Amino acid sequence: LAKELRRLEKLKTVSEIAASISHEVRNPLTVTKGFIQLMRDPDLTEKQKELYINFSLEELDRAERTITDYLTFAKPSLHNIEILDVNKEIDYIIKVVNPFALLNNVHIDVQKDDDLSIVGEGEKLHQCLINIIKNGIESMPEGGKMSIHLKEKNGKAAISIRDTGVGMNEEQIERLGTPFYTTKDKGTGLGTMVVYSIIKAMRGDIKVESEVGKGTCFILSFPLAVEND
Ligand code: ADP
Ligand code: MG
Image 1 (spheres, helix red, strand yellow):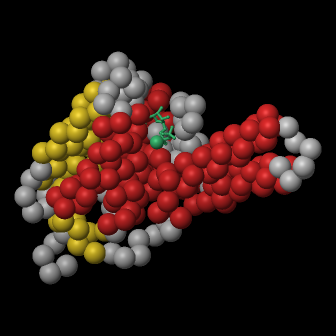
Image 2: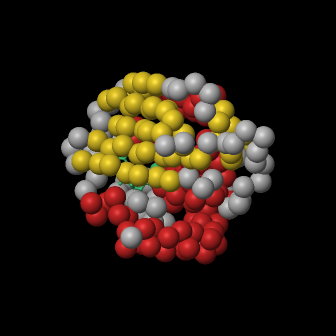
């Protein structure tokens, strides 16, 4: 229960940080603007120019990463609610993430159940699954295997996403979903926060099992859509 309360505490802060995220994007843009203004100077050496260009590109990359992890979260409530065929949604996600997986020597194995429908917003479900899968792939720097399974469990659609990556200890698992918590050089620490908030909006549930050095499994479950709902 204490754990559950902590999780709820985290979610409460989510809306408050919307402002700080626009800050996260605005900062690199301001810095980039500065470098571009500096480049107007006709006396710049080639070396200085090169430096300013590199700084600018790095800053723009940072803004881009923040937006990528945060994308659909900008609208905290669900807007286009529809019945989602989870099989189809997973097919779509795999298509989107496969190039990134291949680039990182990760093989994705998918097992699906037939005809599981849930209620929600497709775009948000995509963002949620992409953020989890992306983290899984990033946890396997030497490549590895990712298994995505969909099945019906206790009247819910359960999606498990398992990686054979670096894993997490108890403390790291606890910190998941906390804004700006990241262990990566180029991390935003926004991915899992977005995941938790989307799952909450879709009345779903998330469980994390992980072992350092072995890997991690995220298990998401969503209520099945009721017929004529
Ligand atoms: P980011 O990916 O930008 O670091 P996230 O919010 O997506 O931010 O993830 C926060 C942190 O949670 C990561 O930096 C990583 O330490 C940890 N994490 C998330 N998913 C996994 C995973 N599948 N395996 C190992 N660590 C993970
Ligand atoms: Mg991430």
